[in-house]
Length: 285
Length: 319
Image (cartoon, rainbow over all chains, first blue to last red; front, side, top):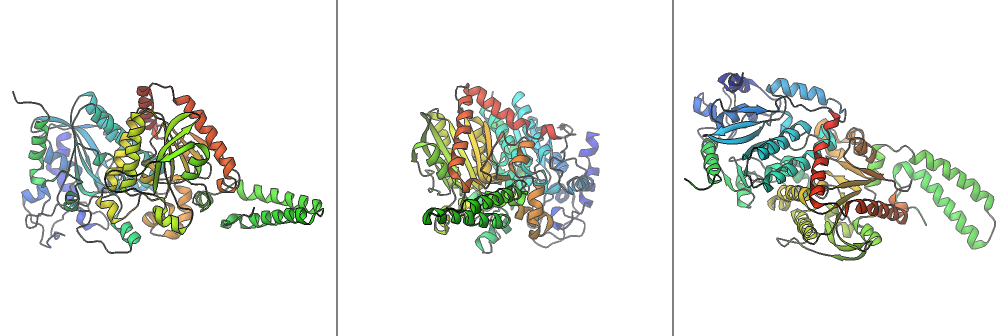
């Protein structure tokens, strides 16, 4: 079953999903790259990475595609797969929205966590999916992330998190805000045990996720051209009554301002993570 | 005293109260007996008071929480603590006047106090950026938190902010990084932490002072993941429906006690903290004393563990 999920089938399913109102979420047959305007080619390599071969534009990657790209084949074991959110506020329309997100993505929640290996290095890994209610963090997402850090701490394993989120899930009100505190506290405990945490910020990572576990890593990486920030650009534009430049809150902007350690192309990401993991295994024997 | 800046729902009531006050001072000045008139008016005031304040909607409470005349952090600090010495600056970039902090005495115990600070008038609000902090505000708080831990001082935080400031400088200097570091560090501080939501608890910018052993909230304060306006704009594409969203977001003290987000409600005077600040200060002081006594001799490791478990529990019983 795990194989099915990681197999080609699930990828084709992703490629046919058409999220409303956001054409850039997934490159589709015959559609053009938002970076350079060229048609997205029907090449396996480009499809596997979801990176435009002409301009290097990084399309958001579905969570299972991400896991397949980063972890060794058949070595990923999902944790807490059935953990789903309730409706603590009985917020109008929330359950329907969750249902339609589930149907659209085939996921139960906006994050998948699990244990896997990266070129043989064992890690606890989490990947968020921006298509699932904007990757927003409610109780289930916060719980899965906190548990991932707790499990990693118990097993003395490093953690790698791929973030993609619009922030807290407002339909869960203050319960969702408290997930920022909970995940941050879980990282703090984990971190104080001397273990390694690497986060990879992908497009888009904003709001409550950026302001909690995403930025608490020992090493913070980002994919090229990702939007990363606290406040949304529209809110800032309304506040300062000015248009923001296109480069604002992009990975490159954050690197320049000293907020992230490195920008890594998707193609090189697995190798880069492997190198970082190896550094933390102690001296070579 | 005269009641100024009435909110929409309390206009008729406060007019009546002003009339009563006038009548009383007239009787006093002219030395005439208006006893019967005053008594009649007082009876009307009592009836109307109960009608106006006994079942406030979330939207009305939201207006109360943001009232310009409410006591702010420095008012509480000066009224409840002794010998407050304000400490400034984040040692990186600037001093952010939207966050205040420093040393003070409480019942003979040296403590560190911190809080968001709004302005009393337009001029002060411009200086304090309406209580919306930049990263340097959170970094000043971080510095004072670590200092409190170093010297074993309990930490008392006051939350009162519309949110972290959404601006270009704030983003360039890592607003998200500043907030997340506070959340993480507060969870491991080996000192008692009491947080009080005294007015507006706006999202992550509020939470950045909000990881605590006890979270207390005034009865007309609000605490929310997003403003009703923001929620209505994003979810409904109709900012005109803010009032409806204020209700749905469950942002009042009563809602949050039920949800297990806060530990206790501190009742305000019926007409709001700003109509009787002294009474409010005494109530807040008493609750800080109660909880501080309970926490102060705890083993630091237990404090940290229980603080973690407190966060771990939130929401789980609901689903």
